[in-house]
Image (cartoon, rainbow, N blue to C red):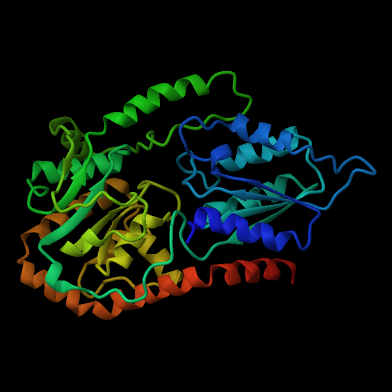
Length: 385
């Protein structure tokens, strides 16, 4: 089955073609948080659509689907992303009027973008299509996966591609405390992020819109503890021998994760305005393992709102409510140290204790993916009722 990144736009196009003469799609490659993507690309794409609805006799009932699966950039303290501001400006400068925009989103950020653009651009209509699922999910998973506790040989698992600061800090903590060698862990040396960041500069000149930092620039005001850790410990490439790499990193099923008892999910962002769960968290669900999230505050709260269960019976999940990124990171570091010290048999009992939640989450995930087209159609109907 194709990924949600491909399925969601195609399903929406098929639905909207019943109501609109022209239906256009603009994906992440034109405005996402990716290397080489600048606000001018979005503006150029909008101009290339040649929409002339403001000219009498050339009006066509037109819809534009805007799909932005990646995390957006927020100026600290702001509730509106720079991508939202650029979208508003690009639509105006491209001279697009009397057109309906459908902003597809998995997160609160897209909802706020829709409201913001609708407030300042009254000549067009902006709709938010909430996707009750997760982006980058590549296929429908098998509905008959067992918990397989007999496979557990490691206390915890963690995968860190270190192009973001929170991943670097957590990986450095594992190195400093010698936690990576005896657990199901992989991480990178972090150097590729710097190389990409230096290349990005060539895309940031002569820009008519607001330029936002590349995804590697996600700093916050670090505590002295975090600064000392960062300066003291060097990163390097490491991968446990039991980690299989025959599947893509964003594949929803990573069978080797069943070899650990607890999975530390390192999300894309950490000090972020809204929860931003994606396929990394789903890999823990398909592996039927309890998880601890290294991500934005209130991520677990968001998951509960989506219908999933968490693991407060075996973990202290108050870390999810800590807004201060230094305090939240420090708590997560303490948790991985604590779990690393527990006997394997005790951890297996903990997993067994939450077996109902593990199976429940798997079933919810399976149901949502199976009914994706139906839920999207219902979302559009609700907009027009």
